[in-house]
Image (cartoon, rainbow, N blue to C red; front, side, top):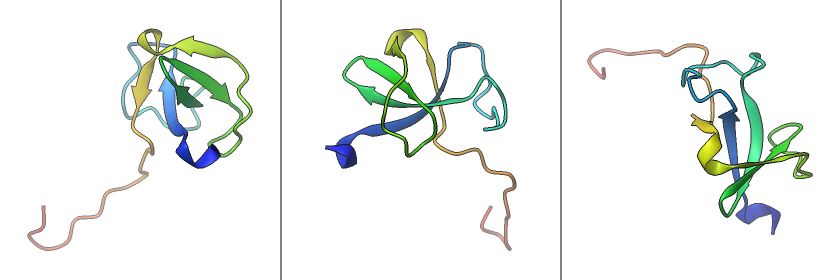
Amino acid sequence: NVFMRKHVRFSLNRNAWPTTPDSSPLARYGVVEGEWVYETDSLWNTEGKEGYALSEVRLLPPVCPTKIVCVGRNY
């Protein structure tokens, strides 16, 4: 089921910063199935290209915000 898949951003470079932007060649999209991450063309394309062991990649945050806005004393 396509809605049960875990979509992730990941990097093959285990030293990549969590703030790696989407435009960087280090950031990739994929789908986690078991202990494998299958690379995809984009976040919504579910056709995997190549698989990597989950232990060999670094998972990145799902999104990379371009700015953070703080209002009043909420920070």
